[in-house]
Image 1 (cartoon, rainbow, N blue to C red):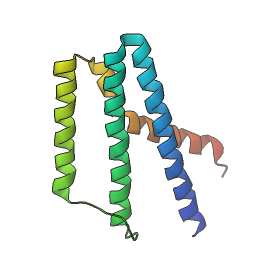
Image 2 (image 1 turned 90 degrees about the horizontal axis):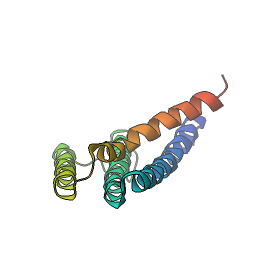
Image 3 (image 1 turned 45 degrees about the horizontal axis):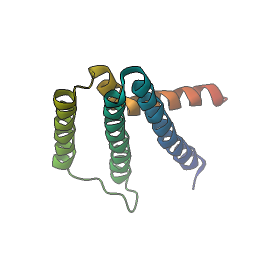
Length: 126
């Protein structure tokens, strides 16, 4: 494995840990701040966001030609977002969870990527 490949593998492993840590922290925050419904809604949406991040990594690996990776079809990717939208609608409509908790969970993978970028900027020397 080349130096660049090892660098990216370490970053991707850290990204999973960061996403999981942020998801737990956000879910606990909403649990304390707004109650169990908001905490559970945030946790469900954060789990969907982290799952989506993992699937996107496997799609990228499939496009890159790595062995053992499944890229999935475009229809499958679109269908996943429809299911996610339906689940979020159900959580908001029937469980009356705040939009703040839902969006905090959904943007968990974005937050994890931003934290990883900051980590690399602060720790990598030119």
